[in-house]
Amino acid sequence: MSTFTKRIGSFESPHSVEDTLKIVFSGVSEQLSDPVFEVSEPGLAAAVYLSRLDRSGITVTAGNKIDTYFRFLVDLTPTTSGCTGEVYLDRRMGAIRRWMGNAIGLAGGLQISFAQCSVRTRSWKTA
Image (cartoon, rainbow, N blue to C red; front, side):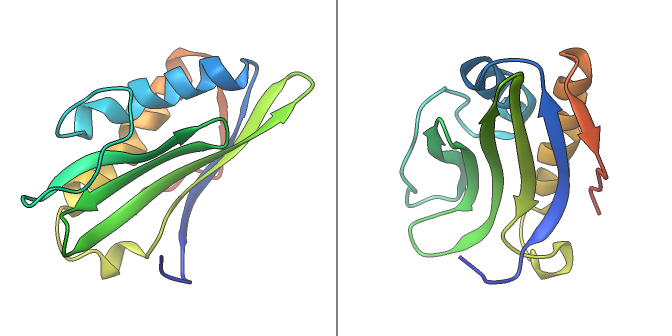
């Protein structure tokens, strides 16, 4: 992963980590090549897929076995009243050479999903 990251924003969820993971998946699933709630491996053909799915969060990766176009990461931290989280890309938008529309769609879809489920976002940026 690149040492430079592009922060999209942070959030506070009144829901459990497990429920927040479902909300996050709902927000990103439209951009996935195969929208299933499980980790996938890169294929020969480029795709957008889940490369991490656990209690610490979700990573969506775009690319194939040879090239990674970008990674979209959602990190979760449990709290006494739900969880908090950070959303970021592994590189700045200008460094994404392929499928930038998917990167923007991931951030936008997640923001909509959060709004529908009473998850409060802070300092949210998509570009």
